[in-house]
Amino acid sequence: MEQKPNTNPQPQQNHEPATPPDPSGPEKPVPTVVPPPEKMDGVAPVTPGKPPTEAVPYTHNSADSVPPADKVCYESEDKQFVVHQLVRTTAKFPPSNYPCVVLRCQPRPHTRVRKIEEDYVEIMPTFKELEEFVVAINDAAIQSGKGRLYDILQRVPEKTEAHKRKWRRFNESRLGIHKKRWKRGKK
Image 1 (spheres, rainbow, N blue to C red):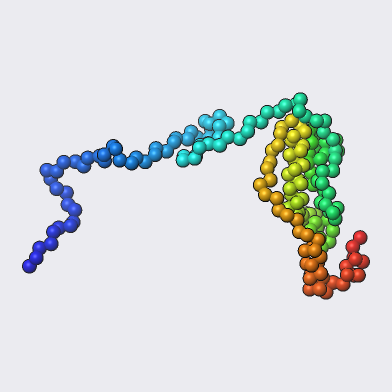
Image 2 (cartoon, rainbow, N blue to C red):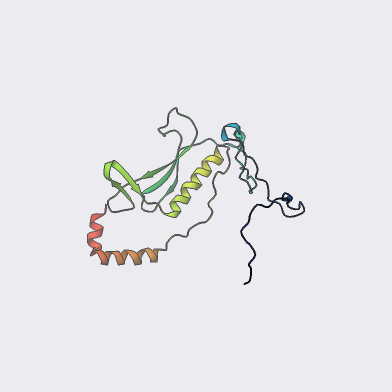
């Protein structure tokens, strides 16, 4: 009968202890130690493996500032979505001359700006309107001397009038809305 070697590892006596691996081989990177947040003194935490990215420091230069004023920055075609820069007529306390960018929306039934339960207003802005809101915030920051704050990474093209007409006709026929009745309901 043939004898098989014993593959069960058992402690053997009179053996030398295992030697550490050769130092010339590949080594694992040692993770950096990040101090707890309470001891960081305003420094951004460093993630192991990624170099820290620093934001542009905020430098307020009042020499670059322009006297702020109340103005309309953007108004949609249907006049339901308006972006305002308010300084004097804003309802903030304590009053200051810092420009605030606000949305003024007019709710109408069955539109993208509508009143819903408990006196809330639901707003469905277009990409263009959101972009105009960011542009207004950037303009207010530039005028106050802060500089540009936000970037728009990609501009979304607006729907063409032909596209809007096509879908308006489709939905009117789908819902049984006649054009005369639709116009009569509008103010």
